[in-house]
Image (tube, rainbow, N blue to C red; front, side, top):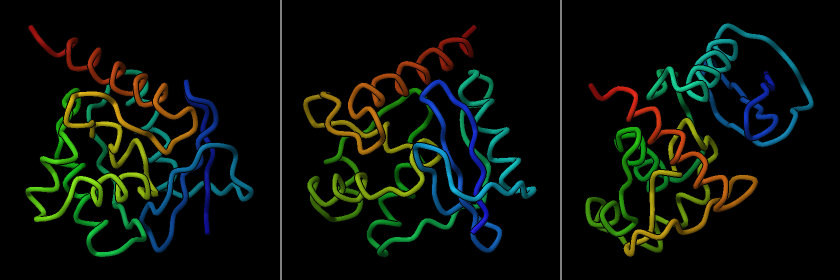
Length: 154
């Protein structure tokens, strides 16, 4: 499976590709380093996103998971940059429970690109984050997006 590691403000991140689609984003350095057109584009889009020059990602994604998890991940992709949604809000749209949505968020194999950091608890508290650094990383990602959205305002 082709992988490409990039440097980010969160440390090294590795993007993995399978059959011409992004299937994973992991913290740390990947074992295999292969530059494919898709992985080069993913690296470029991630750099632009961290630099505040991109609000969303336009990449073909194929995360491995259950049908329910894929529906949750799609719902997360529909949350605009700089905004958040509650676990319960997503659960209601999928006729599920907040706990099930939280578990699907934690199983997200493509964090940042599939923005699980945009999902928060009913009280507005951050909730957990499965990426390296936990809630502090989630807080950083939300602040980064808030700053990006603020720059877009007249």
